[in-house]
Length: 157
Image 1 (cartoon, helix red, strand yellow):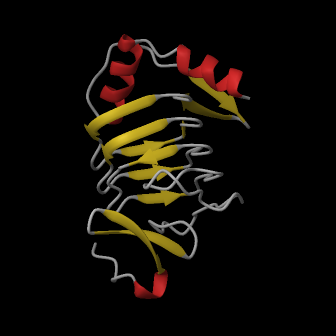
Image 2: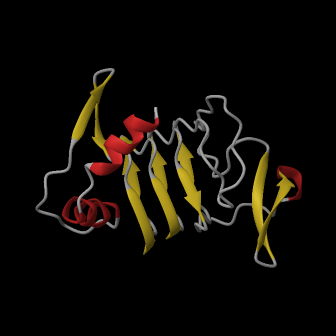
């Protein structure tokens, strides 16, 4: 599997990465990004993408395959992920405030602290909830701490 991940990551040249970032930031791009067909649905194929230190706030990502992608120090405030494959995705030092996940696959994705795993079951977050499972990470004094859903403040829309 590591060879497959390395192969996917090696296809991202600086030019193609810049085009993917432009797409995610809703900026126009003249670069043709790859697509993949799965179950009769066409997905934008961003598998193995690595992005650092940018803001992708208010993005609407629909039918995007981000498997094995790595996001480090990326802001996703108010971003919406709809029908995306987030399997094996790493979110390290990311800002996910009010991010929403609808009908997404979250399998073995890394949490924002980058050192724990979200439970390895398929979790279709079809209810539009911004937090998978019953626990969430809360930023306290520069560290992420687990808190139960009951202790989280109400959703501010």
